[in-house]
Amino acid sequence: MSESALPGEKLYAVWKVKNEMTGLPLILIFLILFGHPVLVQGADKNKISWEKVAEVFQGGLVQVKVSGPDLAEVEGRMGSERIYFYSYGPHAFRAIVGADVEAKPGVAKLFLRLTGRDGVQHKRELSLRIKSKAFRQESFNVPPGFDQMTAETLEEIRREQTAFARAFAASVPERLWEAPFVRPVPQEASASSFGFRRIINGTPRAPHSGTDLSAPTGTEVVAANHGRVVLVGNFFFAGGSVVIDHGGGLFTMYFHLSEFKVEEGALVKSGELIALSGSSGRVTGPHLHWGARLANARIDPLELLTRISVNSENAGGSKSVVKQMEK
Image 1 (cartoon, one colour):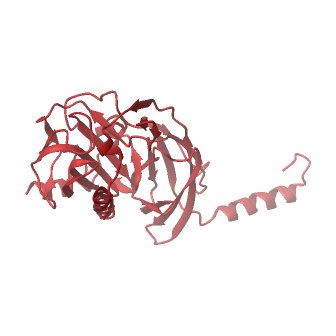
Image 2 (tube, one colour):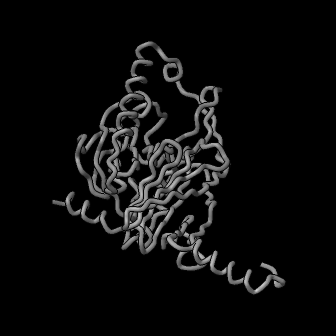
Image 3 (cartoon, helix red, strand yellow):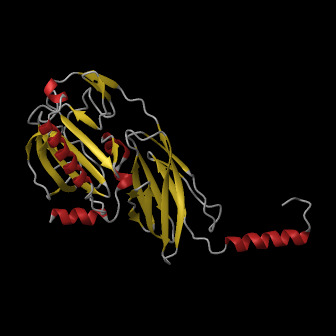
């Protein structure tokens, strides 16, 4: 409104603004990006505004936090995948979102549905800017038997694919995990690790979707967090394998094992022994392949160690699940 407006016009403009603001929900939205909070707030009690763009690298994690005095529930969806939000305090919710190692750089949309205490729903949209990451490349050879697939081998591979697809489709919505995550073996990552672009026998292959930890045969492997064991078996590529569902679409995988210490369906606690490391499957030496998958995005499992802290991620509601597991 210009300074030259007539007094009556000024009064009408003020009245119009006040009425347009009536009925808007009292919700404050915060976005936490890699542990650094970005305030998303209204200019006053009734107006909603928010930072619309977050950034995450391929294979990385970003944390989203939503809170407000009238907020009762938050649901999220990105593409065809549901993004689970969990309560961590009165009218406050948090979710972690992953970008697949081969996610196309650009902008992905995260759609939010906010439900107030009065049952009224509001839809919001956040843009997730996926940034390209420069992964290392490695080249190596394997025996011809590993690279040339017989009919029997192809059948084994199909069985492996079916078993893992079934396991990843069975995540429970409840959050089972509790910060912090722990390293499954004490050893550090080897030269062959997450995101490396592999050239096997001269042929480019898909990027490595896990982190290889240099564990000698027989090293004790522990669960990275609380969860339910959804797959135990031996496979052509992964060898001896254990998959743990931590709830809300988050899984961790442990491959090339020599011995199992758990069975399918078992509830395990963080740090509990689940297997011994080995060199089974399609490998050239003993180590532990540690993988993570979040809402079907293949993410670097080390992100679970570095991006999720006790202070920022412990939430009311997860503790009751842990207590049930301990009984």
